[in-house]
Amino acid sequence: MTDRPDPLKVLAVCGLGMGTSLILRMTTETVFQRLGIPAEVENTDISAARSTQADVIVGQGMHTSELEGTAPVTVTIEDFIDDAALESRLRPALEEQGWL
Image (cartoon, rainbow, N blue to C red):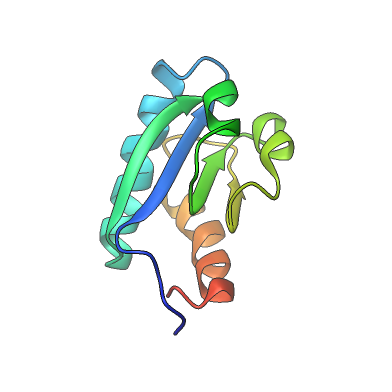
């Protein structure tokens, strides 16, 4: 396992950084707790996400495509409350980084 930042800085991103990203933040926190990885999850809008240092970015494809390459791990989700789907996308990305 490579050196993983502790805690991971994670951004839950949506267009305005309000309701949807808050729901996504809670789902993301659940997944990281389940994986046993300390994570500081913050919900934000796409504009602020562009200028924020993060280890992981989670959001809809329309937003994550604009943020590709700004964080070591970028995960696209379809359903903001489906924690199993988020985990199935997040787990391989974290493994690829050597963080899981």
